[in-house]
Length: 140
Image 1 (tube, helix red, strand yellow):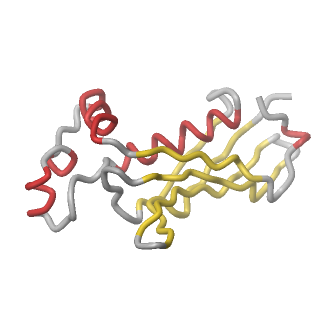
Image 2 (image 1 turned 180 degrees about the vertical axis):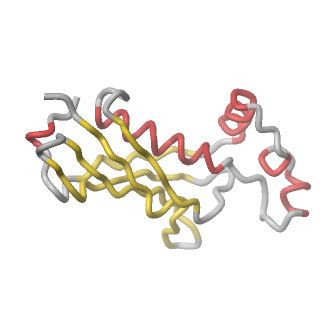
């Protein structure tokens, strides 16, 4: 588990990538009960204006949350997590989650982080999640 006294503003959570596969999105849909055809049916997704099936926004958020918890070492210090979904994620794309400590409060042993998820697209990088925020309260 990370230790509050060893954190500094600007410290980065290790970036982690994940290839988005149809099997993983299907498993997410089955586990969560969200069988929206945007996430399952190629023709339906195209008729809705997408270039193909898209991953659930919360699938992408789940990757971000897992990366954060892996970095913390324990889910119990996570007090708050929020994000803005900015772009769809398509099958076969790789998402990369990252974050940076932006504030520390020694009195409450609280760290605040900026978080994001990017996706490589068209020779560049686009934010699938941007302006994410987390608050972690670490024990003594």
